[in-house]
Image 1 (tube, rainbow, N blue to C red):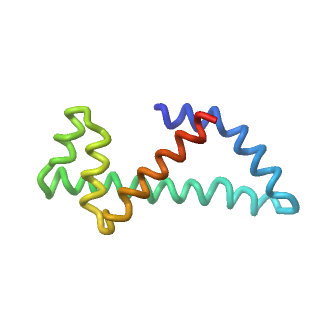
Image 2: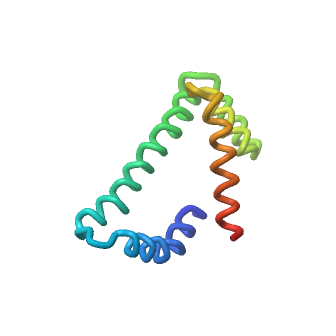
Image 3: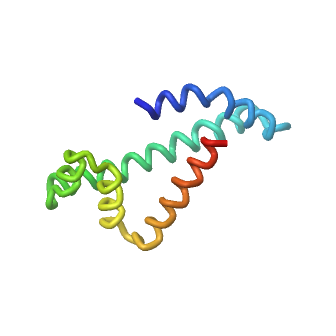
Length: 107
């Protein structure tokens, strides 16, 4: 729910920003770059993470569901990152992206 609230409240600001930096672009290029690429990224993001959690629940140990049911959502996410390849790089990247998000929100 919070994701969609954020999306709806920030969409006008992002649209104005993209319009300002997209001078001399066609409407087709603008829509493709600002909506389709983002939607494609989100489809891949949710497919990968939900697929891994479903795989862990059905075929694996089910630890993700146990951790999430305890309310430790951060622990669930980091446990999921441990299941994926290159976890030594994705965990610090996640921390950097999270801190960057909060810095942008607080400005």
